[in-house]
Each structure stands twice: as C-alpha cells, then as structure tokens.
Image 1 (cartoon, rainbow, N blue to C red):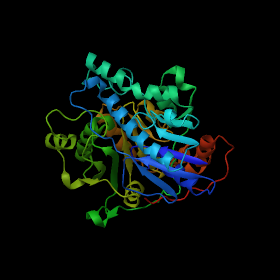
Image 2 (cartoon, rainbow, N blue to C red):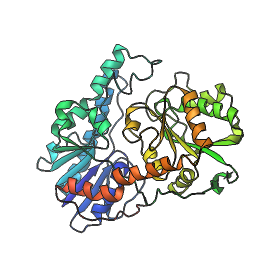
Image 3 (cartoon, helix red, strand yellow):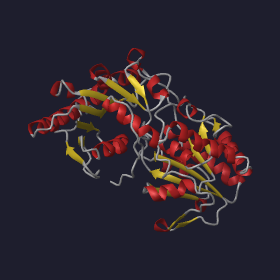
Image 4 (spheres, rainbow, N blue to C red):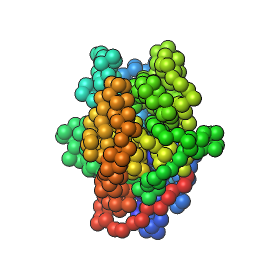
Length: 413
C-alpha cells in the first residue's frame, strides 16, 4: 500500500507511525515536508517549498488563508511529481491547518484522506481570551474566524480525522466531531521511565546539580505566556525567597511558539529577568536539549511545573508523567484531562504564582507523601498514553483493519 504523510515539520506527530509502516514490506511510505533535516529509515522524503511569502498587501484577516493556499499549492506540485514518477497514494495522512492537505482530494480523488486535527480556533472560551489582560476586540474575532478557513475545508474534504485528546476534539464544530477519532500520538514509556535517585549532571553545559536536594523543572518549546512562563518566573522568585537550596532548570528556547510577541521587541525571558528579583546562580536555562539530556532533567526532577492556557496539551507534560515526575500543573482543561488533583499530580491556579509556589513547596516538603502521586502519574501514562499500546491502534485506524502486535522501536533522525 502507498502511504503519503504530509507535515510542514518532520516527522512531528508521525515519527513512530511512519517508521513502523515503512518497516512493513507491504507498504511504500513517502513523507512530504518543508523540513530538510532528519531521516527515517525506509521513509522517502519529498520536499516542497511555497514559491513566495504571503504578500504584505494581503488583508491581515486573510493572511493565514493565503499562507495555507501557498503551502497547498507547493504540496500539490510536489505530489503531482510523485504521481508522474509512479507513486499514487492509497492513503494520505496530513496535519490540518497549514494547507498541506488542502488540494489532495483534487489530485488523488480515490485516495483515503485522513487529517490530523490538532486545534480549532475560538475567539472566546479557550486560549484567545483566557488572559483578562489581553481582551478580545473585533479585529481579533474576525481574524480568528477566518483563521479556521483551511481547517474547515479539511473537515469537509477528509474521509476521517484524528485528534490527540478529547479536549482538543471538543474545540471543533459539533457537526464535524463524529468524523474525528480521539487517539493520542503515544509516549515511549520505555524511554521515558523513572530512575529513582538520579542526579542531574550535563557536562556539555557545565551544569552539575548532583549536590542539589531540590530541583524544580520546567519544559516548553518557547518561553511565552501561552505556557505560563511569566507566572513561572514569578513562582521561581517566591521559591528562591523561601527555599535557599532550591535550584530551577528551564528547558526550551527564548522565543514565542504560540501567541503574540512583546510589542517592545524584548523576549519574555528578557523582560521577566529584568523585572523579577532572582538568584541566577540557582536558575539554569539549558536551551533545547537532545533527548538523552532532556530525559536526565526529568529523571532528576523533584517537582515538574507545567502551565498552559486552554490550548493544545504539550507532549512534555505526558513525558514527565511517564518519567514519574511529580507534576504541579495548571488547573486548565487540557491538563485536567490527564491529571486529577491529589491523585496523580497537583493542580494550581494558572494566574496565581503564590498558589503555584505553595503547591511546589508542599511537594518538596513531603517527598514521601508524593510517591503515590508519582506512581499514579506513571500508571496514567501506561494505561492511557503508552506508545506500545497506541501504535498498533494507530496503524489499524489508518489502514482500517484490526490491530496487531507491534513493538515500537527508537527512531533516530
């Protein structure tokens, strides 16, 4: 069977699925992407690139749609070349929203088109108006309504959809939700596993916290309001005042992955460090880490803080749970789907650094009492998010057949 994956990134959510299918000699797997870096054994990469940027003269409301159309056009040209070379997909699985799947039913009308539906945008009731300091205006409402245009086209065109969490599916229009199956991408629980007593030593970064008794960790792609970075830094300041031996490790890049940039040109990290009293000898920024070093951070964590607006749930929280971290998370809908307060983690008010700091301090003060929560966090992932269980189900869903036993293998890009 010929299978075409489409994602602007590579390999993103399709990492394990593409690899597993490519190891089956019955399938030929091609991955269309805009990212040159990376390789998956057995998977043929096909690159596309839009022929221009979005015009600065385009109406701001319509720019996301123009971007999607340009991407869809580039994907169409790439896929048409595949067709000319003899590759005609039986199944297409692409990430919706960026335009990669927009025109696939026109080029391959007989192919089964499956779309990965990660998020549907709302002006009210989820992420966009969550922060009362950022009120929604008429421009924002109009912009967000039109931002859904490519996604609505995919909802209409696709044969089936997949969403990783029930919270995320609930954001899509009710009339389309029956078309969307809920199944998470899966967490490699063998890799992300606890290592009691682990100490954090990263020689490459000259970071040695082997003597630290309290290590609070935070992970996000970007340091931004969507993931509660300002509230976290305020929490750190409170913890440092109360706990002179506490060290904090922040994994991520100094950028905005979601939401708005600061209007003054500064990053949120720059602004928070300039305006928050901090002991920088006990606050460590690692940047993005390769997986083995990232795992060391999680395994050495005394408490892991995860904050998010009502938005897409990060892989990092589930990976931390799988590693047996004690999670202090925001009491927001995506987190509450996986964490029950006092059962497999602790929940705090997203906007209240004092509450977050209190929950972290409670966990640090009573490590033995937290063992049950750590164990339950790991068990939650094993029962509901384990890649070893979900990967066969993903393959069965994609191929529309009964699940079979598959052992996930590490994928090195």
